[in-house]
Amino acid sequence: MAWWHRRDRAVPTGSEATDSAPACSCCTGGPDPADPRFNLSLPDPVADLLERGQQDAIRFASDLMVATSTIGAFTRALLPVRLTDGRTVTFGVWVSIDRDTYARVSELGRDGTDEEYRTMRFDGLLASSPEPWGRRILRAEVSAGIPADSPYDRPVPYLTATTHRTVTRIMNEAWAPAEVLTGSRAWALHYDPDALRTRTTTEAHGGYIRRALPADTVR
Image 1 (cartoon, rainbow, N blue to C red):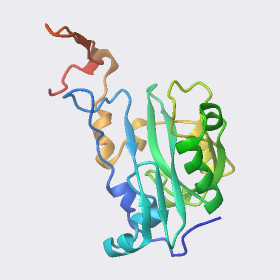
Image 2 (image 1 turned 30 degrees about the vertical axis):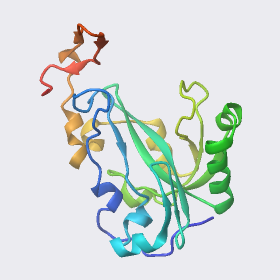
Image 3 (image 1 turned 90 degrees about the horizontal axis):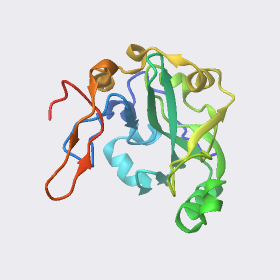
């Protein structure tokens, strides 16, 4: 199993530090606190490198896969976390995978049939450490695959199983919003389901329906 060989640092990781509120790509609205989503920009071991080290090590990088010459390869997977207020926070984490798995996931994503892609499964080590769990979940053994009910043609894999006690709790328990939505994610704490209103706008040249937004959302 490919992994990085360095001591953990007792400081916030680069991937955590670069969390940001996701922008809406379909309109001029802000992020939706009813469905908060956060992609961690790089795997922790890559983010921990200095800028020059990243430039030297990274051989390929996209929003879904990262390959390096020194610390292995990584692929994106989604980690949904249920909140006690009924919402789900979705983290786009990274999983460290071996070379053969990297080649197989790349090939299926690029040239595989829909059926082949949807039955894809792989194992790896968790390479992200979002707060509040932090580095105690790094290197957790995890499995990932494609949800059977996904409506998308090439959906991002989800974490499906783990033997790690804390990651098992993350995947199966409900968490208090104030415990999970910290730091740069705190914007999603401003959520009031009773204040949501559906705003429907019909344009003279083509109508559209905007998603429900909080009453105090700045447009």
